[in-house]
Length: 460
Image 1 (cartoon, rainbow, N blue to C red):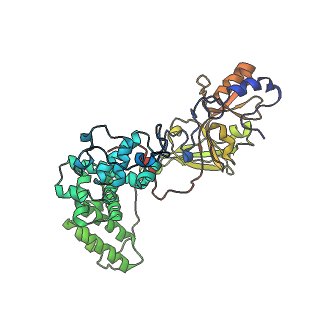
Image 2 (image 1 turned 90 degrees about the horizontal axis):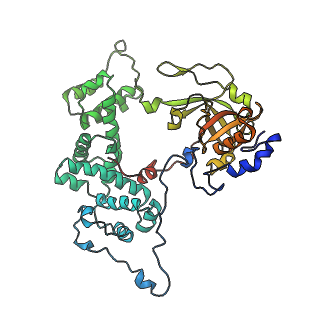
Image 3 (image 1 turned 90 degrees about the vertical axis):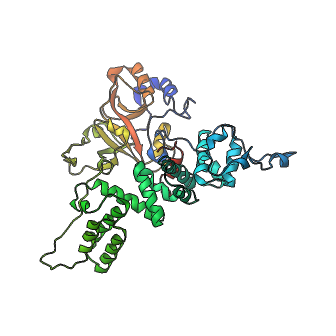
């Protein structure tokens, strides 16, 4: 059993020098800052995610001591009452302070899509979601809905929609209706927004509409799609048409689904297709059907890796004996050479794209990798690439090396180069380079990726 980052026997001669150089760029080792290259998605390590919380300059919003009452008095920003609701914030200039913007958000004296601009500006000033929540009472989910929804609202403004439609979506709560439209083109955003307003759809129905529109666009292989036009009503009808085809056990439920489709259908061909489903057929005329779906890249693009062993017990022979991934054909079917070998399937993260000969190593306790970015314990998997370019050693990376073709040590790139200087290049073999560490799913946020979205600059 080997300890991560340790050496034994005759290599102790270089221990002092190696230890002082090991962990360069890692916190708690030499104070050189956070420059980790080991990536741990569940903790956000190495994924270039913006930090949360307040930036520099925020000391507090409540002052104490003599005269504190007058200093803490709530005051509105300059010319605040002269600004019309919905007025472009750029007209006010850049003279608003952080306190001014937080005050405006707290009072909510403007329409939501205008307030979203202050959320974005506070983000650029380093004010995190937590502070905005604590001071203004707008949680991360609401912030995300405002910022993303305001981008969709801006699209409607740019497309010169009616004032009535803009007024409809300026009401508080309308951001939930616009949020699902974020994935659509500008033209489809307008078409769907007009349909949502006219039909009075709620948040869930908006999400269903967006999925129906996207499904209609992608199912180019389905001839039934041609019976329904590409508009919100017919796309929803096409969705109910497919649902009715899949309902084979409950005739009453099937009839209800068809009626929902008939309420939405706008084309005559679409209505006829739905009505035909209600016509009872003789048993010898009925045909079985199965749904056929063309996979998207994100649904299919995965990485299948063999398990070489456990971090604390793996040896050189184990690392070398692990099977390489051998995928063939359009579905990447894997041919397994060893019947008793274990495999793991992972999403195709960016670091894996450039990998050539990748395998996986299980980790019983992720704190074994504490020096390289791990912050919490629990099981995990370390993915390594056995093809290593020795001419381009990454000093901030993590490498598996051996001196005796038996035991493995995991060291930083800096320490690897240090050991080469001490024992010589011919006495040290570099077996693999770590690409990423992953942990199993933890507790899921009730709003999915809301925090991740709000901590980024909004994009149309």
